[in-house]
Amino acid sequence: MKRISRIKVILLPSLIAFILFISCEKKEETIEIPLTKEQLDSIRKADIEKEIAEHDTFPQINYTQVVIRDKAHLQEIFNKIKNPNTEFPNLKVLATLNRKELRFFAVGQTIVVPDTIIENMFAYSCFPQYYPGAKDLKKIIMVSNKYQAYACYEYGELVRFSASNTGKERTQTYPGRYALEWKEAVHRSSLDSEWVMPFNFNFHSEAGSAFHQFMMPGRPVSHSCCRQFMDDAKWLFYWGEGFKKDEKGKKIPLSGTPVVLIDHFDFARTKGGPWLDLKSNKDSILSLPEDPMAVEEALIPMCQIPEGSRGSLRNRQRYVHAEDTLRERGIIRPGVKLIVTVNYNVLRRQKELKEIKAREAKLKEAQKKKEAELLHEGTNSNSTPK
Image 1 (cartoon, helix red, strand yellow):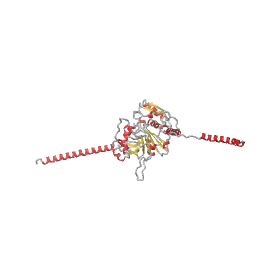
Image 2 (cartoon, rainbow, N blue to C red):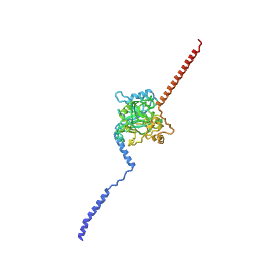
Image 3 (cartoon, rainbow, N blue to C red):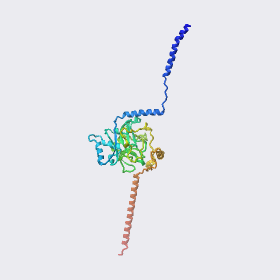
Image 4 (cartoon, rainbow, N blue to C red):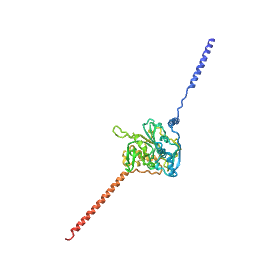
């Protein structure tokens, strides 16, 4: 009996220790609760924002809205900005911030003036200095209709920030994905040869949309093109890459440097644009799509495609229904009538041909009249008595 008691005494502590061990093991188990899509998106967004912030090393530059009182006041602003002791184009900063050439600055206008000039245009970019969504892309161009500007990236790093005046309301440069196609250093428009466009880089052959130099008045005013300052147009001309060809020598669609227009301009605003409302270079950094190559190919209304180019359209039905879709999305406002693209070169040739025919008919009529007069004179001469 004593032996049994001793066994119980020995076994009891061991049993208690075993139970405690099992209990501790259970307490250490963790239950993993899967995160919701919203939580995952929030975490991913925070990571992206952190990565972007780490690349933004420029100090804050404050902007002030100034109403130009008179020509002397405008010259005073120019003198304050420019610096004869540096090769950096200080006045280009002023032009870029206001999205227009200096010659379009006028008395009575409101402009934005920076309190500091940093000799790097990136410091004034409304696009992020780093674009995580483009880190695997050799090159890409991101365009904002809303802010009338574009940014070029190489493997996600900003390599150019520039102003751009895009399409007016009735001939917009519609949002979506495009790609650079072909280029010409001095291009005469296929629609009107009187339009000369230096450093032209086309990004939609059928619509005729292109990056090129042309006057920059500080508003969307073009016929679906992205106008630029001369130095920016020249830089992009040599930096961008056009379409590639397959083994049969045919053009591969959307194979050039990607071009993504991320938004549309609010044409309800009749003067200036949101860039004039920015208080600093940190005020509004644009959000870019996580995957730019997944952005929908641009929808362009059929009326914006010249009749002679419609036969080469891919996905023709997208162009047929584009206007309805764009109106549903609010990109084309109610009551706005789009302009039908006209080939002025054809009209001019038709007019010239008509004028040539009119001149020929007039000459022919004059010749007939002269022959009739000669015949009449000859008849009278023969009938005169000798």
